[in-house]
Each structure stands twice: as C-alpha cells, then as structure tokens.
Image 1 (cartoon, one colour):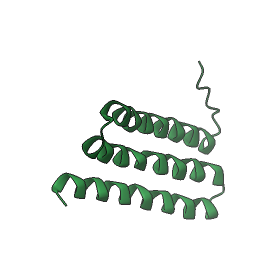
Image 2 (cartoon, helix red, strand yellow):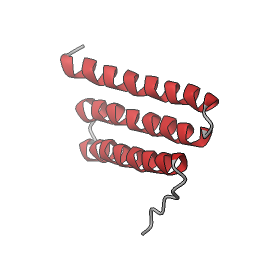
Image 3 (cartoon, rainbow, N blue to C red):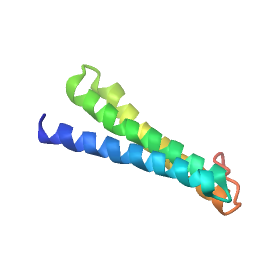
Image 4 (cartoon, rainbow, N blue to C red):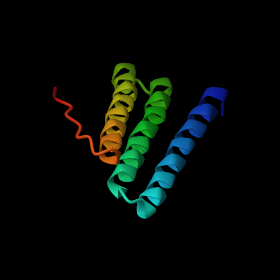
Length: 95
C-alpha cells in the first residue's frame, strides 16, 4: 500500500467515525434532525476518498473526479441544511 492510498483510507475511516459520532450525538440531542443531517453529510463526504482511489486505479478519470467533487459539494449542502435545523433557519437552496 503506497502513501496516498494509506492517507485516503485514513481519510475515509475518519469521515466514517464522524458519521457514527454524529449519529450517537443525535440520539441524545434536543434537535436530532441536525445530527442526522451532519452524519449523512460525513457519510457522503467519505465517498470522495473512494472516488479518488477510483481515479488512480480506474479507467474513467473524468467520471470519478466528477464524483469526488460532487460528493463534497453535496456534503457541504447537507451541512448547511443541518445547521439550518440547529438554528431554526430554513434552507432555501433554490434562491
């Protein structure tokens, strides 16, 4: 295992740990929907590491790089929705 693959694996595992922690926190929180949004956001963000491995070892570079960037963008949007639930500010993504 080379250094880049090792770091991508560590990145994936840390994102999954954050996902698990936010799920546990959402069980005890007064606003559980915010914790669930954060957990799903980290689960989606962890897919970026998977797509980056696919860039290296796959034959479809453009599709994998699109997946890596779009998974981070979707995760940021989900974090925005989670923060909106936390502070009672609705997220209007379309405007």
